[in-house]
Length: 635
Image 1 (cartoon, rainbow, N blue to C red):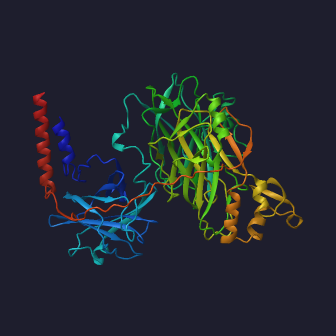
Image 2: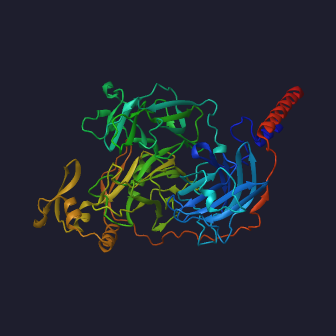
Image 3: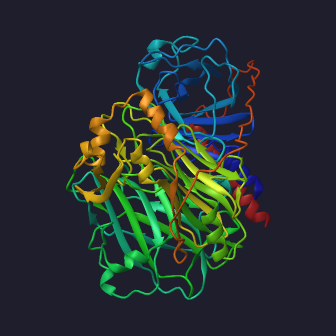
């Protein structure tokens, strides 16, 4: 039987549509160009091995770009011509032909052609010594660009006419190394004995507004014994992929006072007339954002589900981005949960860390190339929640980093007794349209005396007014959703600088906080020259923002007193303020040493075995049937 399995991996084509090459147990994969290009890869501490399958008998190109375009990209192009595989290391220039790099830092492993498909496997260093044209492949989000042509290069090397003849191209953001999801080859999609349940909207008509938050209270059937959720999968209505910005699933209280709260399709979130039971939805279960995929819990961890101690009521919150203000969008998106009666060792929890969402204590100056905000989770909150839950420590195994469109990087830092520990999670090349979970093999452990921060960097170049913190995509957030175990009763630990210290920077000495024009703002009462104005008017219209004032504001804000929100389903800390921690020993990232691969293998003879797709497929089918029959007879 093993012989048959091996043969099935080496078959060039068994269906006449796509060549099936052995993927050598690559741990990661991605589909590009609507499935006409497939990328497989695996990495160690020094190198990455990639295999590209393209629906072409021409050339294939893969590149790593700073912004998703050709300019500044590190590009690898390969092709198979007259039985020989070629690969070249190139670099991108703006809207032009990618010249060949003078230093070839890619090693060709093999190539094949079969049934109209081309496969090329190669290796390169994560940290190349060519600082001029090669880009480092790091744990940050990578903008992967791709292209392929229908024919081989006319001459011995790629030339400008080759890329202008029937070329298909595009880009996609991916996490290639580091805090990457577990190997998809090691995940069983449907474990024996598991069940699934859908928590979705039901043909909801989306209002013609730019930003809309919808909340839907859902009752699940009675599940008499405790189970564990082991997988959560986002279900996005086809065509609405760019409309659904993020989804959060909450577990609510179990004592439903009024069954009318279970209306058919929910209501607008944060509205004054939200049903009462929504206020009990304090336990985070899952979180997805645009670009995110299936979430698998580690083998020893699951989210508690069913039984007497777990509520049957859930709140599905979806943030819709309807920038085109369409009035004919129907959506049935939501979450599919996979659960099992085979309980795992630990119950999982989910907590949101970062800045508290509001616009009068969290905002970003206009026209800033870089401005950072920091949200804290102070030790007093960890200590209170762990003591309440009788748990000595927790371990973080996954994070989802989250900002809106001006966000450029997110870092989750960890402090203990004034010493900064290894960074928990980081993305220096954050992509608003690709917000994927990051998995942490080290599983950093948080103790009651620890302090955690979420630091976000923004670019507001071109903005004339400050960018307010808030729910809308044109507003900003700074958050990290952290999955951990064992579960404690803590779902939110966020902070902002206190308003008094913020507005003192703008010489506003007295004010009141009120809802103004649908937003929270401050009404200035002193000094007299600002009396009757709003805080936002003073900051936007009367403040001169330039590099100097932006820098001064940042240096002042980073030292301001913070106000902490610390809450779970049952645990609530009294509101308190604190000073940012003094760091005596900051974390220093290990130095990355470059490596050069030997480059003698940029040309290899291609492996033959699929020159005639129809004949080969017929021979393979015959051989496969003969082996199967022989095996059955032997048994």
